Amino acid sequence: MKNTREIAAEYRMSHWAEIMRQRVKSGLSITKYCEREGMHVNRYHYWQRRLRSAAVKEMTGKPELAQLPPVGWTQVSAAEESQKDEEVGVTIEIGKCRVRADETTDTEILTKVCKVLVELC
Image (cartoon, rainbow, N blue to C red; front, side, top):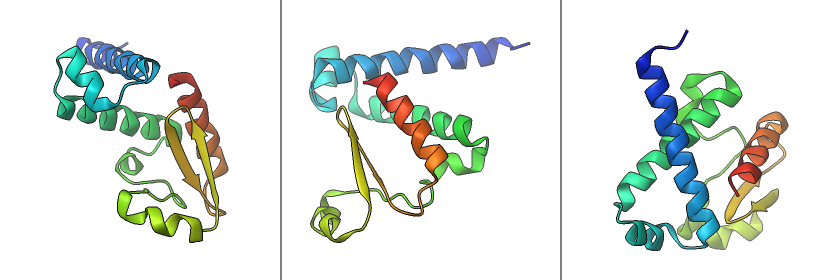
């Protein structure tokens, strides 16, 4: 049976997942959405990291992996954009989210991530 702390944590996660769904649905950038809603961008990013971490933990069953990118995945930043074309792999876009995978990407995790993204978008 769940205790009060676990129930409260699940409620907060559910609340923030809904906020993120609403942000995506609005079509606004995170910054513009946060301005409109009167929330601090850092708070939004904090909860985004918490939700992603919880999703990885749930999908893999390995809490230690929640802070690491899955094997075969790369994080694309502005500095890496020019190198992107030279990489071998595939980019999957779901809504405004972009997932990059290559031949070493775990297909089971990729499938679960795509399902979560479809649900959020």
